[in-house]
Each structure stands twice: as structure tokens, then as C-alpha cells.
Image (cartoon, rainbow, N blue to C red):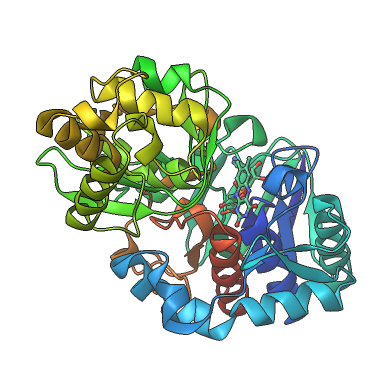
Length: 410
Ligand SMILES: Cc1cc2nc3c(=O)[nH]c(=O)nc-3n(C[C@H](O)[C@H](O)[C@H](O)COP(=O)(O)OP(=O)(O)OC[C@H]3O[C@@H](n4cnc5c(N)ncnc54)[C@H](O)[C@@H]3O)c2cc1C
């Protein structure tokens, strides 16, 4: 068994750890980067459907707000020191030009996530950091001023350790929550964790019946047990055989999970129109076109199967006519169009979740350096912390920015 002595050991070669190792080694710190898998950066490789939505074009306060108030405030230092424009320059200077797609999302022009991983690994090599693949950290102890870390490849000691082992989502990529135990060992609090950015499971038969449909321009919101809205999104919604997927439902998953099985989602199929306005418009149409089907009041922007489902949910028949439309039936359709609530007890879980919500408590880690406030020389960054963001490159952006701070200070 070998014994190595270095300045910094970074644990986990994901977005945060790769960046931390590059920065630490570039400062002249002798650095070892430990990775459990044979292949480093596996999550980057599979991200964005293999295209890697690396970051966003959003900036400043608007960027911070995407992570929610508390997490956004915590990330302020990391994001100001290394905003999306800086991450973009870093990756482009490393040979991977990016371009904006799908509104505000930045992807490699080549459409290949692999290019990002290759460029980062080149940066690791140029920085002088030593990458140990197939080398899971199995234990970590403090011995005086140094940390002693065990791996199947040997023992390594270091003055500073950066933990960047990720969360619990997509465990097949190597993120199996190993870092939580070590953080606990050093006295850290791990806040409750939930899957986030995952498709939503829904048993409602009308939802399952619409499998394959995509809605655009429709609002979907998560409601807590008391019926209060926690988060709303107007992004594409995909109906699947298990429930709801696509950007908007996935963005709601963390909030849904936090409700412990009591969440509902609320659809507003015509978010640009007030309920009263809509009713007025429908009444006028009914007066003018009594022979028309009730269905005709529903916007053509909604797919036909969706329109038929709304009629059925409100108790109307496809053949019902505007001329004989009762007030009750009209109100029920209004309710279905503007405020349709569906129980959504949970998401599809960690196996399908792009991130983990919760993790190492933020008030125990210095947001300016990523150093533990409880254990000097220990740095914690990336998804292992209680940080998550919505779809759109926000999770990589946060991981790279935090990893950079850790590497500059470790
Ligand atoms: C399918 C999918 C698609 C995604 N798409 C996007 C996207 O397009 N844009 C975006 O911004 N975000 C995306 N994300 C989220 C993003 O991948 C993560 O938020 C980000 O990778 C977190 O970075 P990290 O470095 O903190 O952790 P990770 O990337 O999870 O890296 C942790 C690393 O630590 C290693 N490790 C764990 N335990 C040990 C151990 N004991 N010893 C040594 N190494 C260990 C793991 O093998 C892993 O390589 C996606 C996630 C998934 C699952």
C-alpha cells in the first residue's frame, strides 16, 4: 500500500470537485483528486440529454433568486466571484464554445457534453492535479494538523480536504451520499434530503389518459397541505404513463416532496386571462352562437385531447351546446380551466431526480471560502450542500462557482 503526502485532497470528480482541483493545483498546491468511478464527470456526461446545459444567461439578483431566497443569499459570494459569464469564458478558453438555446440556457455548440468533460480533464492535467480514478474514499480521520484519507489505492494525507461527493440523485453516477457521513463525523448537520427536478407520479386517470401530450403556455403550481401555492411555473408540461414530466413539473418536484405526500398541483390552462373576463367572454359566445358545441369556447392552443379531458372533468358531454349551457356547467368548466387541482403525492424519486434538495447545513460552511466553520482545513461544496436550483444550467453554475471558491482557499 502506498502512502502519499499532499497539500489538498479533493474528493469527487464532478463539476464542483474538478473545478476545485484545477484551482487548488493552479495555485501551486500539490493536489490529488479522488474519484470513485473509472470515468470522472459522469453527471456532466449525461446532463442535458447528453448535451450539457452548462449554465444560464441570467445574471445578478435575478440569477440568485432562482435558487430561492435563503439559498440564493448563501450563493451570492460564489456567484458574484464566478458568474455565468466567467464560467462561459472558462469553458470557451478551454476549447468548448457555447451558445444560447431554448431561451437562456447555454450548451456547447458541438451539442456534446463529452467535450466539456474532456476540456475539464485537460485543465486538471495542465494544473498539475493528480487524478486518481477508481479510487473511492473509504475513510477520513484527523491526525493533528493533517487529514488521513484511505482509498483502495493507498493512504493519502493532506492539510486540506475538499468534499465534493454530490448528493443522492442518480446513484448510478456515483452520487450515493457518501459525503454526508463524513460531514456528520466532523460535527455537521445534514438537513433532511429530498429528490428534486424529477418527474411527478400521479395516479389520476385523466392525467394518465393524456400520455404523450405536451402543453405550452400553461401554469402549473405546487400547493401545500393548506392549499397555499409554494411554487409556480409556466414551462412545457409533458403527460406520461406515470404522471407529469417536462421542465415545469420537474421544477416542482422538490416542493412536492417536501409536502410528505400531501401536495397537489394546480393547473391554470389560461394564465393570461382573469376568471371573470373568461366567464364574460364565454357568456357572450353562448349568446351569439347557441348552436355551437361547448367545446368551442376552449382555446385551440390546447391539444384536442386536453380540451376533451377538460370537458369530461367538468361533467360536460362532447356534444353539449352553448345554447343550453347551464350556469353550473359553465362554472365547473371555468373551475377546470382556471383552477384544476390534482393530488401528486411524490416524484419518481432519486433514481430519476437530477438533484438532491437538502444536505449539509449552510450556516455551518463559510459562503466566502466554502470552509467548514466546525473543522479547519475541511471544505464542502457542490450538491453535497443544501443547495439546489431549477432546470436551466443553475445546478452546474452553482457547483462550479462553489468548487472554485473551495479550490482558491483550500
Ligand atoms: C440526468 C441528469 C441531468 C442533469 N442535467 C443538468 C444540466 O443540463 N444542467 C445543470 O446545471 N445540471 C444538470 N444536472 C444536475 C448536475 O449534474 C448536478 O447538480 C451537478 O453535477 C452537481 O455537481 P457535484 O460536483 O456537486 O456532484 P456530482 O456531479 O454528483 O459529483 C460527485 C462525484 O463524487 C464522486 N464520489 C461520490 N462518492 C465518492 C467517494 N466515496 N469517493 C470518491 N468519489 C466519490 C461521484 O462518483 C461523482 O463523480 C443533471 C443531473 C442529472 C442526474
